[in-house]
Length: 92
Image (tube, rainbow, N blue to C red; front, side):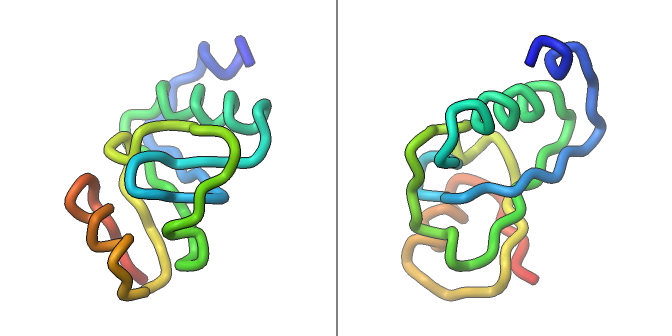
């Protein structure tokens, strides 16, 4: 973990298990710590998640929703509209 903290990233693309209105989440503590360290050391961060992850919350909070842009498959739901108020969402 300490090694990741010493790296700089121009762009980071990170998968996430859950995205709720306020946080990016994952089920594993160690995985969450690694993802958090990468987020903190990247100039631009993109979260990759298919539509099934939107509105889902896992055990470990990784970062606030505003910390990264989201790239996701197109889906129209109320949860995604609330997330769009807090961060950039790119639907593909």
